[in-house]
Image (cartoon, rainbow, N blue to C red; front, side, top):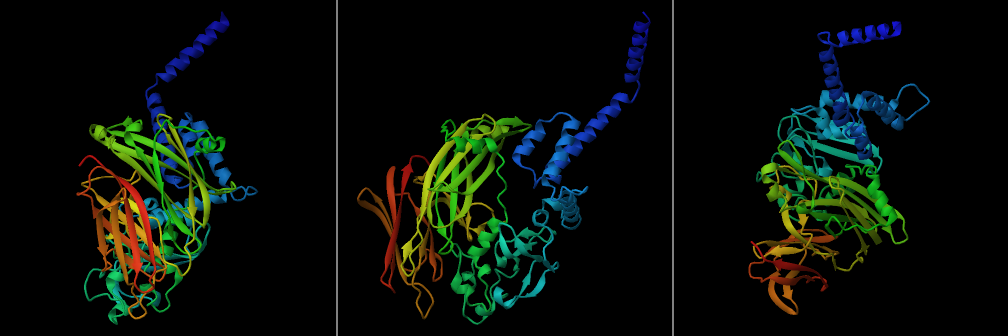
Length: 539
């Protein structure tokens, strides 16, 4: 009886304590503050560090004790020196985070800016040049010389960045005058007088040796105008547009593989076809030793499972890819997540659209096997594909046509207020038509590179005629001849870039073949490339 009375007294005290005013409110407040702390840690503090696997695990944890233990292990796995009591990696990361928030904020937190991202990922540059107020600027010789006026800009120099290279220069430009400096892809982005005739000319332009529209990045197809760049005294190899493009992609730094279950699917060679998708691969040679290989994936939205979050319907697709030699040596792996979002009231329209993803790789000459796995992260449906690509180095001194890219969008980057970071080759946005299906009301976008053309020794320009022929079976149904070089976006001793849109209004439903033939009147050489496509019903 005595034990029962003691137990009843304890329970009565506990009951009264729980009913004490403020106890419940204090606990709820602590829980709200803890939730804010973990949210900030996950989506701000370590957003550039955490892998998807780690994020998935963390989001499944339910108690503060579990989350605190996870955070401790997260930093321990990244500690650069386990023999010391201080986690040097964590200390340096939070120093960088505090620095960018203090110095790079501009209406948005510093960690969200391009400068903030680069600083957090790569640390303090070895050298920084500030032109915070813009204004009058005398170009360096390798920039073309001459005097102009600029937007505010900065140049960061790193001696070495792993996975990117040595002697790296990164330029940021504030075109909005708001303090938000954007990562620049081309050196002319800082020039305020770029579109003002007769002002801000380079030395070569002022002397009549070059024309402004020839600058790389200012005209559709002017990808790598080496002839223009060579007119600059002290021009550097790393300033060529293709080299800047390669650095731009390398600075995105491919992350570690996160979605391990997708990698396992490739390892076990299991084939799935529940989630349909289509892919197309192209290649563009940077030089004799490397090619850019855009791999484009198209997923029909009607095959995805959308979930509702507030007023938004969302779907997420995980993509894993692996490229290996025919002997099985893995040369590249990548993974990413593609998100599709629509307001709930527009979901039915969105489901009739498609989701596009592109990964651009750099590969050396050779034959490769490409394996892709995609997964609807909501339904769990999977799709797999195994394909191959053969990269043959263009023969020196021989004019060779590369593969044709058929595009549903083919636009100069001048048409975009901000430089897009996907589907870009040089200064042209090329969105491939993955299925190669067009309506008669569409325009057929054609992108093609011709390697090793001959330039006239007097004009330093090519002399070529270009034939575009569309055939159905053995019968030509349309032919366009370009003898004035209007299709040539840019030229150099290494390449011609052809950029053209063709009307399809006169074509009936059916399958066709496009053939592009280039005839060099200087050397007498000719080369051609062809691609099949289909005209379908609809408007």
